[in-house]
Amino acid sequence: MPSIAVDAGPLVALFDNSDRYHADAIAFVQATERPLVTNFVVLAEVAALLPSRVQIDLLNWVLGGVEIDENTAIDIPRIVEIMQKYADLPADFADASLVALCERRGIERVASLDRHFDVYRTSARKRLKNVFAAGRA
Image (tube, rainbow, N blue to C red; front, side, top):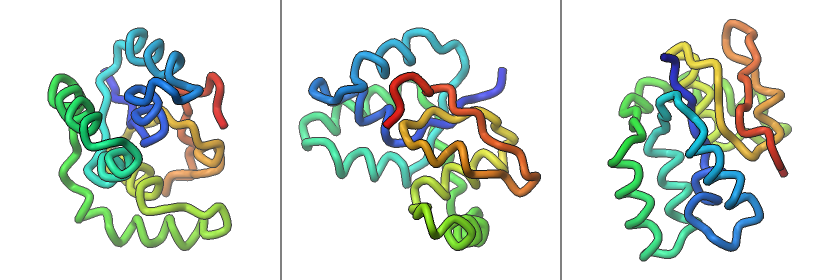
């Protein structure tokens, strides 16, 4: 079964009870049957937005069922291309790393709160389908 690449927004919402998308994030995680995958760049962004005590909960949850793709280093040339192409958004390192991960692994679905994921195209000019569309900012 194909994976869903998870961006920082839904992960922050999942672990921040005050986040306006907290309930949506819980519902998403409970409803999805597809494996979830992310990378260290996204996890670092999430950790930077959460208090230290909550970071431990995040990491324990990730260890329990989210695949951490460890190949971001080989994606750096493509990440740079993506960031340059979408500089007007702006495309940050975490977003570009997730797009590159999707390209490399053939993942077509992403869970994000960012509207600009609708703009990104893979190198094959395919649009990533945002499956966390409910309540996007």
